[in-house]
Image 1 (tube, one colour):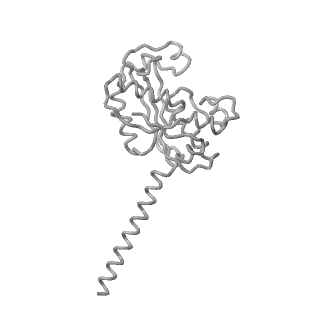
Image 2 (cartoon, rainbow, N blue to C red; image 1 turned 45 degrees about the horizontal axis):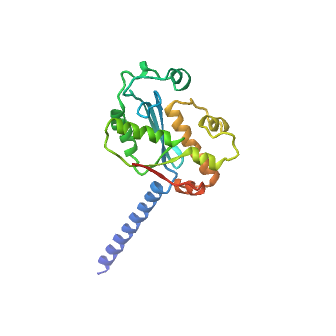
Image 3 (tube, one colour; image 1 turned 60 degrees about the vertical axis):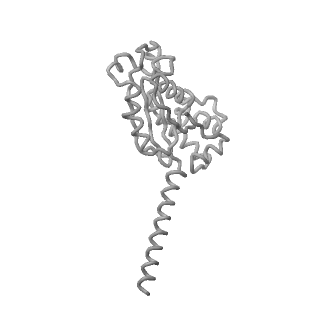
Length: 221
């Protein structure tokens, strides 16, 4: 009887320890400053003309990994001024690259699937979410649901005294050295701005940060 009681107590202790461990895991995954910063560059004014994408994963406000790819747009027209003065991507750079469906399925989806609960963040998110929507519609891809928030809106709420909240100006203001309009660097800088805003608001989670800024998580469907 005594041995049976000891065995039951041992099982109970193991169950309690497992629940505690799961609690810490759930808190880390769902209640930390976790997000994936994303940025697109486009060849022209059409939202389906993505020519590069960069994604950077941030866990607890710190970069952990990233991916980047050039993309061949469906129509290979590049606005000359954008190539020469902005993202410096040309027809020659992408003519042999994969198109959006291959890049999305082979690179982006595997990357975000590692942490599917992490929301996207982008600077001026309507643009980047519009690119995703435009490319999905153009290539007739199955619809997917993504949660996202906007670092531009967060910056405006966090530092209203600044004369500009463009990513380039924020990078200069906070001493972030990066290549503007290079998708991976733009995504990385966007993620760093979110972390800086969270520090100022003393926010421990993305939801805390959004609440401090009177903002809500948005959804792309």
